[in-house]
Image 1 (tube, rainbow, N blue to C red):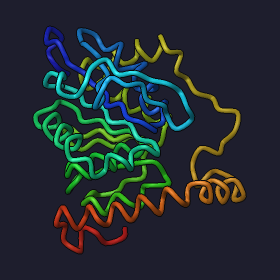
Image 2 (cartoon, rainbow, N blue to C red; image 1 turned 120 degrees about the horizontal axis):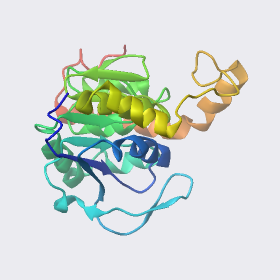
Image 3 (cartoon, helix red, strand yellow; image 1 turned 120 degrees about the vertical axis):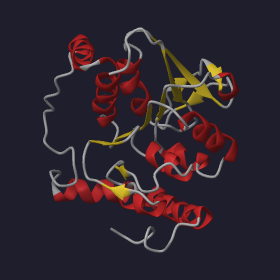
Image 4 (cartoon, one colour; image 1 turned 30 degrees about the vertical axis):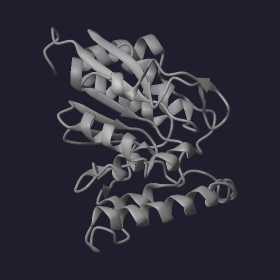
Length: 240
């Protein structure tokens, strides 16, 4: 736990085509962490739309961000456009250096991988992209939340809430995180048990994989290019 008198700077990255719940799920937690300032940062102040069309606007541009204690990187289909965007990747690297927590959610882990932050680190991501983590030198782990040093990865979409509560507990203690959880009434009881590939009915999983096949192929091609650019040895880029 960090000194409660230390004011924390928490920031989320916003970009076109993100999955809004990768942003807004953790927002519900991170914005309630005691003695902190939470802001959303983007390349510019123009509104963006999430993968399903929800309109979102940043608080400030990247260059206006202070040194962040917590860097939150969401995912979504729009992640692909950032994978070789050096100004954004440079900003992520600079903010990650010395941060208390680097917190990618879903395919935000791939963005962090493109910035070189996953090499030798245990990490997770959305089930449709999990097999790509090895291209970035990561040690893939099948779990909703994976911690390795200051890196806290959350798997797909709703796991971002679990990851954010983990961040809150690390920074302000378990009781502070529990208070946030209680305020949110976060006690999920989904009506169906189909939230992982292992539990989803086979026809449902097949449809989901087919729907994601195009973006998955694009992500794999990008991941291979980035692995070469990062100069990762063949052993790091071998399938798990």
